[in-house]
Image (cartoon, rainbow, N blue to C red):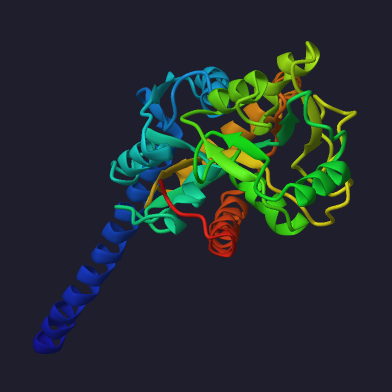
Length: 338
């Protein structure tokens, strides 16, 4: 009896250890979940930097600064815009791609970032090294012509260009920019040869059109509005699929005889690859709230911009399509880097 009783005592020891282990494991799991919840709820605990790859004053910078101000109020921490111009935005993109994935370094991306991979070798991969957070804005481009150009619409411009192959030209913000590829797409679809003249910035291309150095320029609506108002330039069409709120009387290229034409600029927020999903969700929700507020939408419309947000997954798919489409367009047009 004593031996049997003693055996049962010893046999219960492993069972007790197993039960104790399960209890400890459950406590650790609960602690980890609570810690993660607390971490997610506390983000952000310090200021956030948002890098812009272009000089102050451009459409990407203007959108970033206005959004950052509202995001600061929404997140309870300052969102500071930092301009790192150069290499068509690639310097800022590389900096973000190589930063810690902690949610405190973000990028305000433009369409240029999805064009560059087809033009030159980059030290990063847009799709691999960045985490899409949210699309923010669509930027319709407007075709502005000098008053001396005898064309009042796209059909007349097409006829004029065909009668003068290689004689007309257009200015843009540079090779691969949001104001360059619309012209190449028009050349391709309309079967014309209007020569591209690249400038260092969007406003330089517009000023060149005003002075008559070039016949026309593709530009942001923000840049074009004051010049249209005083009659220094004339708008023929916008590149978006629907008419721009700021220029309701100006038709789209699609309406003007080029079915399927669409070539808008855009902006969106990204972070380094590997950013925690809960932080991505926090940022996505905050950006959606800011960009879809009535006051923001009204401000954007006055700038010739359209608010457009969505899920991180939708933005990721959007970027993949842009990279593929830009690569095809660059190959078809034979566009080369500067």
